Length: 95
Image (tube, rainbow, N blue to C red; front, side):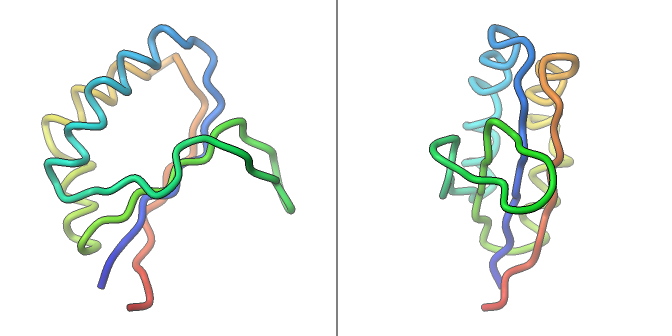
């Protein structure tokens, strides 16, 4: 079954967060991730509003977890520490 990273992001330091983006994209793609939504128009119907919503599809839950724990992604992750407030969740798809 496919799995998805769902990220809710408020960027506080755009320059630092841009450095994260330069490294995160290739790390995610290396592990089979494909961006389905990356910013754009969104509406918070319940809960807090985040400026940026990101949805990434992975071939499996294990691939999504492996990507998040990879050295390539950790290098990217370190660039965004202190540059954004985020909630990131991995969820398994239905089919």
